[in-house]
Length: 96
Image (cartoon, rainbow, N blue to C red; front, side, top):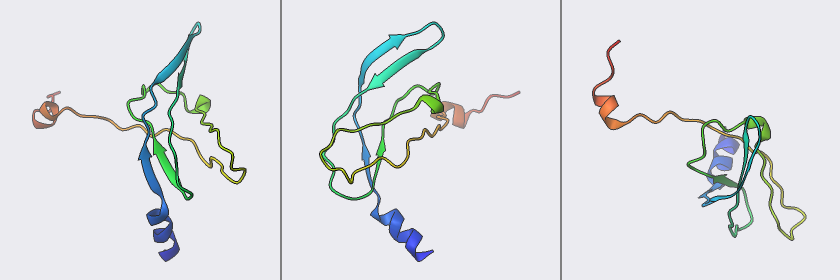
């Protein structure tokens, strides 16, 4: 348990500004590419890209980086969806 707590403390977090750089329209979907830059210190990082469409396909999600450090790597790429509830709906929930 103690080792797990140390690992959580060691993870640094960054919200990356990664605007849409290219869109390719296909018959039934679109390929949206975002690009962002960050200079990271050595260590574990959790990098978040916000305001992405909720219809994102997990199986096509990809991340890559350009760096001159052969020991650097990306361990995991995933999406986490959260429901946003407007404050007015929270105070007055719909009846039904």
